Image 1: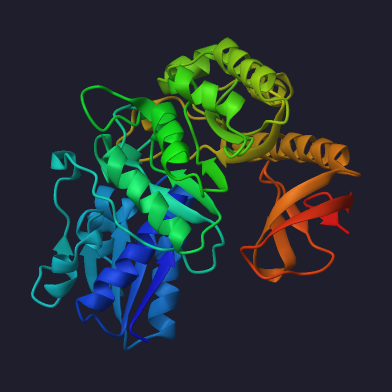
Image 2: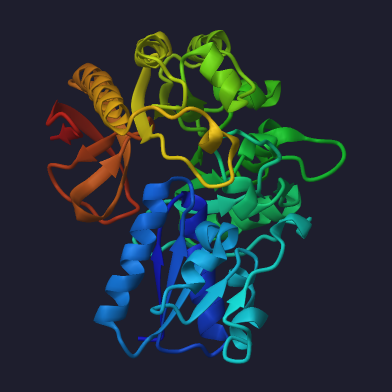
Length: 411
């Protein structure tokens, strides 16, 4: 064992874990376990701390390094753990120089992330265990939602130059990748220069200049930032997959204001209706928080019925957990049992929406991208259990014959 990385959180973290593994190994680091943390919820931080303790018991002789968003935003929490040997910031974790100097560095090496002004492209050919390739186009966030600590872990928004993104897409295609996922913290804020070309122009340029890209997918987007070029690409570019994951967060306008979100309930519904008119086969996923401070039962009901109003298929439910230092942590809190109950009901609503989508797929022919373990994904990102397993990274035409409530079953 030289460098092992345990990853929590988003696709961007997953991509960065590959950079960590490469840069640390190139710097000569050996017998080291890196925990790349997430800070989006208190539960994510708790799981990271639990994993650190477990890893120390399992690998008492390995050096244990903690990095990622939780380490960046609250390094003292991990520095106080006797199991931890080093704490690295989010910029430092990607630097070969930082890994080369690991033995001589202070126990905590976390610089001010807000001073970082540029997003460097870290070229990786793929991620272990993943069929699709993740291509980072942006990092950081300029918005200050009242529940969120991510800007303090990632810094302000910054974008990878468009030529670098296109060149990396070419590299990934040449390496045999058939699907590319554009990732970042707030990718709809993509703006690499003063002309603010936007995410839509990037999508069009990438698909034009790298025609061999067979499937292009977007990670989570903020619908209020979706520009006309992006909507035009959705309507007219079949290689852009018909699945959008939206950062909606809630269905009640007063709660959205208290969250400092920049859209209303009507905005979210109108966006989904417009996109579905442009692309009838579009499927939506969304993040929704249950139990935000001051949320009443009537307010929560507005989130429940948002699932139907927006026609959501994949619902990612976050039970609210106060993050230290955020305005939401100082607001009147909802009782813990009520949060659990609302999260349970919201998940049930999402499961029912998914079942309706799965029911509608029976009898269809779908072009799927295969993954490990006999699984695949449709263009709408719906999981499929294959009747006959195929090598990961293969594109197949399959017939959908049934489902098990969670995934489609193909003949």
